[in-house]
Amino acid sequence: MIDFGLKLKELRKQAGMTQQQLADKLCITKSVVSYYELSERTPSPDVLKDLAIIFHVSADYLLGIERAKTIDVSDLSDEDVKLLLVTIETLRNKNKH
Image (cartoon, rainbow, N blue to C red; front, side, top):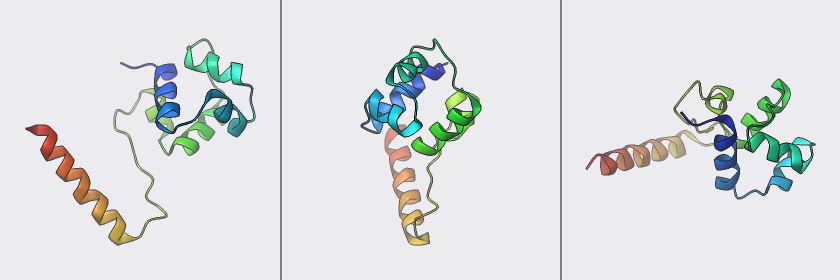
């Protein structure tokens, strides 16, 4: 099971963000982000909620309760969502072989 710190670091890097950029978004210091990633500190519920919003994932995903990553499609058209679903299914089929 991947721990919170590793998951946070992975999400931050996937988003192309530095620790300082994430810290600025959260209104905390870079060292606190580093402590989170090293699993030396645990974020408050408010910071956890903000991280979920920033990375478009659920708090359950961040905490390792839920394995599946979610994608926020709320600002996409129905047609765009259908296209994404077809793409996802195509990738799943490709990875099965």
